Image (cartoon, rainbow, N blue to C red):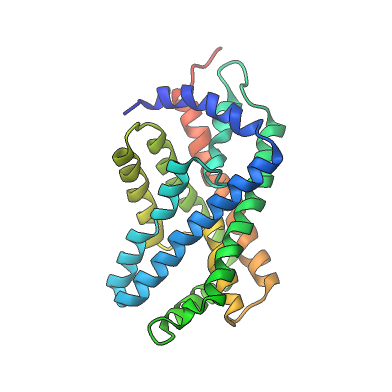
Length: 257
């Protein structure tokens, strides 16, 4: 495995490619990433409903990392992981990426992620997957959406900060491994932990909440966007960009006077 200073150095090259990518490619790559994360979310709901209880929550948490594993190994663009782009932006006396490039990446990747999550949500509803386990899966989906929309905004921000600290650490460690098995282990542990603890991930919620709303969960598009997605996005940015991105830059970059 590469050391963190080596990861930071090599990530500067990756970041430059990410921030200069054409808009259409950012969008398309974002759609795939959002779809992959949604698949992990769907799998976790199916597993949790099938097993039930506390054990079901644990099994569901162990299934969810499949989404980020696909993102990392296929090489598509995920908004929450791309919060790390600020690390090379801080630079080592020079900046290999530009702030406007980071903002462009975040904007179009975020939009693509949203589209990907919505596509799977629609596929789930129109394929009647909610009828699985005598309708119990649909109840799980609606319950998850309703509880997320009812969360206190301050609580949502804090849970989102903690979530993206773990997600960005998963991405960071995965970048340090050149083997498929190493990347799988790097992704599994932190992501399993954030799901088990009930932290909030903006891209996952782009699937969880629309699915529940489509099925008739209590709430509205406004409560989804204002009560959940906005504070969760803010928290994800702070956790990923400031804490992890800023942290690894402060610890491992070569600083001038």
